[in-house]
Image (cartoon, rainbow, N blue to C red; front, side, top):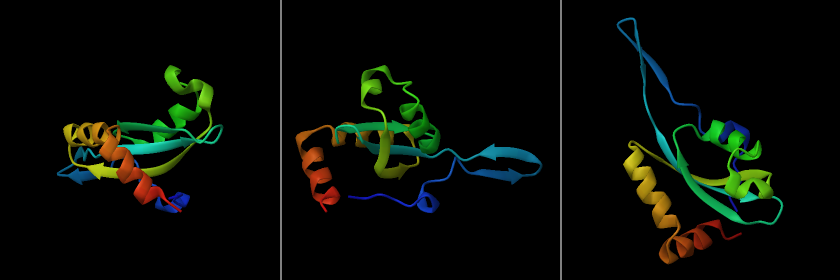
Length: 106
């Protein structure tokens, strides 16, 4: 199982300065979280993975509110939202579940 130390958690979206203007570089994530309550997995995508995990643990997602608390066990970073959504959908297929079982095996 992959439990990343806090120092290796992805940072919030990066911010750069260019000619006095602020440019936000958007990154997107496909992620897997695990319920500490019953070890069930939840697959999703987002732009700010740190904030999204906090939302899950505050119970803001009604469909999994009864499974609080969650830990981030896997994520992948993408340049576009479309790519992140595509990967999330893959994780939900039989092939994606086999892939996750293989990479998350102890």
